[in-house]
Length: 272
Ligand code: NAD
Image: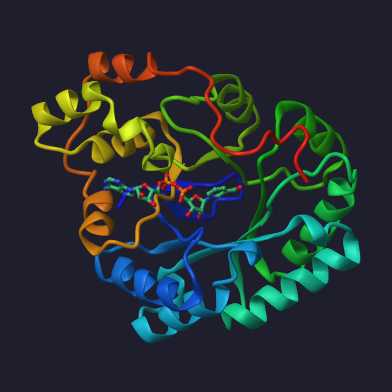
């Protein structure tokens, strides 16, 4: 498993397992399966209502805590300094963990205009050693610029919608200049449409890999952290088998050419 080093020297697996839209019991099973296949990083959120199931699977696995990397996020109704501190405590109780690896502001929710205040709470949790790294999600260049102007700690990463049809070139460049890692959500484009593009199957055939594996490998070679989701054991296994081949520069360029700025999720400039 490839590892990336965050801007505070914390090491994070480059590929993890996402559990959005997976009910608590099902998340417990899916995470147990993912851990068996070698995943060590799990991405959840208060919004997903499965932090308890994730916590049960982590404990039941018997894997030493220091080998696991757990991310959760505070939701849009938990912005504000005191609210964020309370949100963290509640998530930690549900997860059943002492220390978290990565805590994220799920959306900047610019209309609320409280994300700087929220960030100050994350800085406090970080200073107190309750979380090993803090970051954001769905921040744009403009919300990041404002945050960076007021922040004491630079976010370790920004988790954003990113897949071949929404390649986020500008934001990735901005992150790279400032030492912020890029994490891709919906890295497979939610499986809809993207994975059916014949060109991905054609590229995959050259390497004996599926379209999903080709897309995940494209992310890995760009340097993105990825957190694909599946509840199907064979796909959970397939999605981590992307470290035994490399796409040629020509195939990378072909996939780069699929970018059409197509967003599947909400627009972060207005959402929340
Ligand atoms: P994804 O791009 O990972 O796609 C998942 C879907 O693709 C699956 O439900 C399945 O239908 C299909 N799929 C998965 N593996 C496949 C395979 N090998 N072959 C064929 N089809 C396959 O989408 P996602 O779940 O939206 O994103 C992944 C994770 O990102 C989430 O679980 C969550 O942890 C995170 N996320 C974060 C945000 C955010 O706002 N921060 C938003 C959405 C998702």
